[in-house]
Length: 327
Image (cartoon, rainbow, N blue to C red; front, side, top):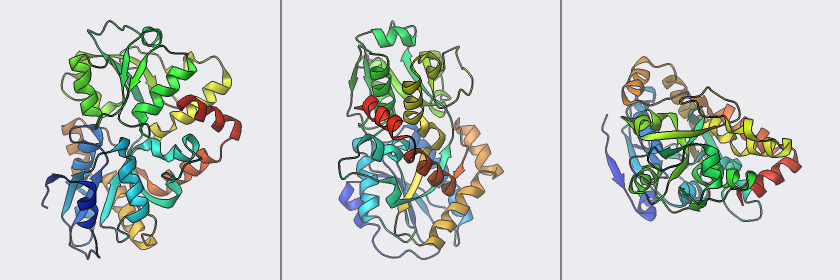
């Protein structure tokens, strides 16, 4: 199977995929972030193995199409994506809550696309370099530190924005980074001091845990501490805020989602879902993931779509509070 890396302008990235794709032809996985981050590394792992479970063993290539925390790519998939199964997008898990966070604008709606799978179900974390002078999440909340984020539609923003509002934080949030790897580099330079929404996969990379202090675990339920860090929801006293933060952090259960155009025929969706499902128990794929330090716990697309519907149907009072937390 051929594999290559390209970074394309948005217009060309989509025009290149026009037309029908027959068995054995090329499939493109587009990543809504720049090279080097966890979304990018996960997509490359999947690209190396997915073709074995598709008719004709098509070539799988990866293209980075960053912008606005992957919102640009998600919106293009929603409005102009190829509907033949040839174009798969890896976008922010937080976009599943776009109708909650931004209900009055014509932006991305997860109900207008098809979810093929999510590649990981894991907690996220807030981290800081060990030389930042920030020793706890309480220190961070009370500090004048800067937290880095990609776009306001990404979990790197929604998680930390909700923390700031719920705990009356004093820190600032800096957006505009092309991906998680850029935020990490900015932390190393001292341009920002904290990143929230970092994954276990990123923490598993060489010497990461030696360089970073974990401030808090984020999620709907604790998976267990890594460095003795607190589970953030345990620090929330107001029950409505706790319920609202559970909504905000719900995307941790569908990390690294893969979507296709909403007009994709059910048969194509089923074929792609079956291929992803097969990877979940494939020894070669799992061994390669372990070798690369990637945590992959694939959830099928039907389950992801059902979970999104459940979240969007939550108590309107709690959804309103979740919206207020990320404003």
